[in-house]
Image (cartoon, rainbow, N blue to C red):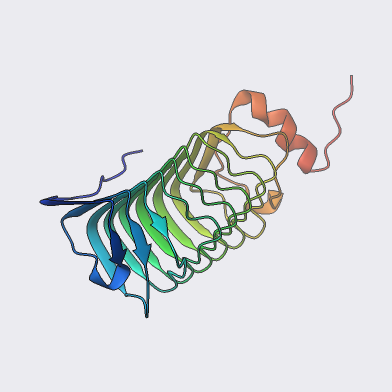
Length: 207
């Protein structure tokens, strides 16, 4: 699957500064900055956040276009009802983050800690989760198209209520998943995963 990368023209570097999120400017690389917030902002585009800290993690209904988060702590952040388009999260802490009712297209999550994150009721197209950990995260009642879990710890991921035609977990690592077998038609799995998923259907294998 081809993910369209962020389209960025970066012309400025801001390093080791305290920056209000309302004053974040496009085409800027923010490095080791403390991002504060008063009343929030609706849209961020063509920005890199590298090793930044965020005093407030309320991103509800925000739009992120062509944005890269690199090694940022966003644990328990609220991204619900937002739009994430052509963006990347690299080596970020996102445990317990809330993405309920979000829309995501051409998004790459690489090396992130996503345990207990909640993506339920989201619309996801061309989204790639690679490496890292997403144990016991939630993808209930999602619309999935060209979504891949690759070389990532996906144990206990909850996919109940989601049609899995557009999901590829053939290179994911797990012992157990929660899903509806009746909605699993078209799910892509590896040969070594078949036994684990057969047991979910209630089928008994006897010798």
